[in-house]
Image 1 (tube, helix red, strand yellow):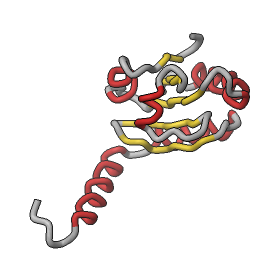
Image 2 (image 1 turned 180 degrees about the vertical axis):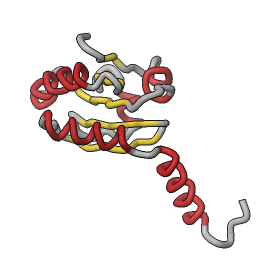
Image 3 (image 1 turned 90 degrees about the vertical axis):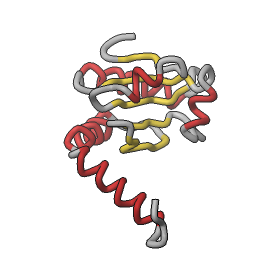
Length: 132
């Protein structure tokens, strides 16, 4: 693949996505999907511009369990992950400008704050009676 693109499979998902030390943009796609093929050049161009982001493509025909695990219902679906947290997930192809904006916001996030907020949310969901 050109640029900074990796094919993501169930076998390499842990290493490519979860253990990445920078933001990861995953494109869930299929070869028969017209909008996916139309978005391909935008995704590839972004991978060449944003070298500080890992770009991965998941072929949902070949990686059905992986797609199912993320609840992918329509394609293309784009997902941005950072520090094992899904920061963005949306079905549909984006313009180059929209994609660039999402990536810049993801890179600018203070992940310590994100993890703290997630921990606070989890604690609040447990309720006041929980002692764990």
